[in-house]
Image 1 (cartoon, rainbow, N blue to C red):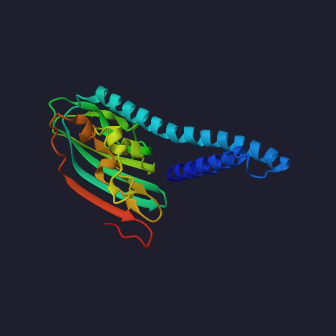
Image 2 (tube, one colour; image 1 turned 180 degrees about the vertical axis):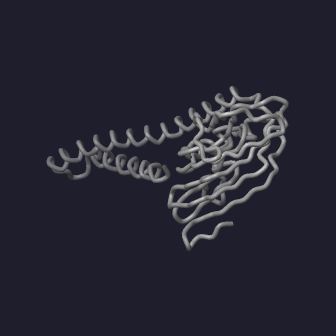
Image 3 (cartoon, one colour; image 1 turned 90 degrees about the vertical axis):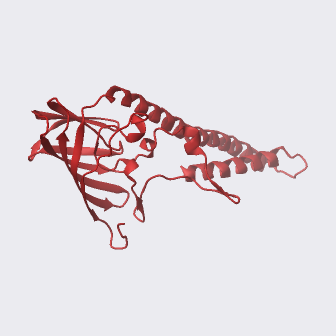
Length: 251
């Protein structure tokens, strides 16, 4: 989208320059050049309008997507008290895509038996398989919410071990849903330069994966969407293994 923005600026400049030349009567112009310049100018106007519409539509779609995610969270406000006691992740970095295999041990701390679990996962990552004891489980993925149906209910104080196989990239629309769009779009100014804010990044040369990016399954809703409710922090054992190119170092 940055290239589209810069290309739009170039198109506006070239189009304005061309029509200024066409309309400047004092410049010597042959009839043939004028007949060529006018259609080219019209084409540039149409193409510039098309690129501008695509650029603005990108941000409109992003705002609509974020609003839908916030609205979706309202259906899952009252979730049972479950605690992830152990998380094991195998992350493979393949250029602009990720392959993430996660194992989560979930403890039922509520007073009732639980037959389904709700997890959060970045919508840019698609689930290939969810298993329990090497048996596939039924699940549904709606945007960033994943509902897993268990074959038998988890009793109070019992735990269950789920394995997630996911792959894809990171959708930035998902990050910081509690922050207004105008605040996200506001770029920091250093001298005369403005820098675009990037919260997560996946490319062949660099990877940035904060926990807010939801790059592995997490139980419940994102903390930003639970505010102002006080949710306990999911402290537990965490194991991470990363496979990437030899020129990169995992930190």
